[in-house]
Length: 55
Image (cartoon, rainbow, N blue to C red; front, side, top):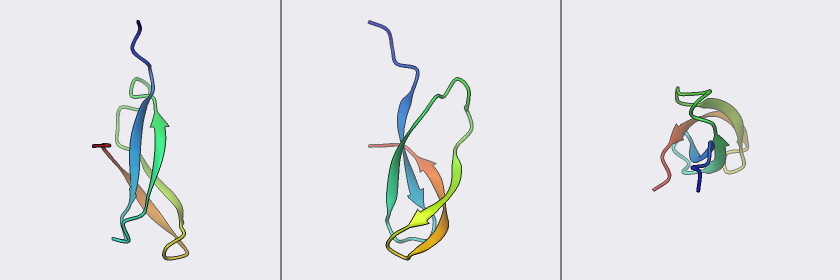
């Protein structure tokens, strides 16, 4: 069975609220760590989310 091309990653908020999103990423086309501005419902603001590994 072939290995899937996408992996699941955790996008964690940098403001320390503890909120995170789970996303998919293709490491062959995007080998660098993801950084995305997304909405944080806990603080009700847009903040930067950075990629972390899912444990």
